[in-house]
Amino acid sequence: MAENETKKEQQEEVLEETVEETANTSECEEEKEDTKESKKEKKKKEKADKKQDAMKEKIDELEDRVKRQMAEFDNFRKRTEKEKTLMFETGAKSVIEKILPVVDNFERGLATVPEEDKGGAFAQGMEMIYKQLLTELEAIDVKPIEAVGQEFNPDFHNAVMQVESEEYESGIVAQELLKGYTYRDTVVRHSMVAVVQ
Image (cartoon, rainbow, N blue to C red; front, side, top):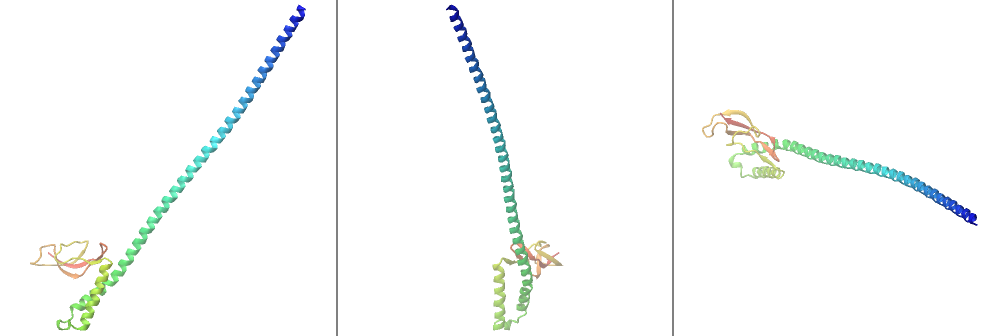
């Protein structure tokens, strides 16, 4: 009986060891499976992170392209607006240059009217047309250049001769031969003047 009990004990020990080994094996297998699963998850996470980084990079690149395109368009719009303004200014100057000889002829014609005819209907009509023309030119910012009595300024005056004068000092405009005009602070036609020596 003692032998049976010893055998039983031995069998129980072997059984316990087998159970323990089986438990250890299944724990190891579970750990291996957990490790495999965590490795798979890590790989998936890494792939997802790489995809996300690639997407962020692509988004940044596209945003940069859009910003550049918008800046280019804004520059194009400003440049076009400036060119349009310059074309308008050039066209306006061209028209004004063609009208100025008409103004000069009105002035010459009115200067030759004899004193006794100045009260006549024809002379008054011509004077009214001349004043209307000057008013319209002023409305579009065309102004005559001050000349007589002013210091000679090559930006506004074109000296065609020198004269002697007791009235004015040297370098002062003594006589205006042809009236000059400005359009919006730029010279359309320089005044032709005689300057004191």
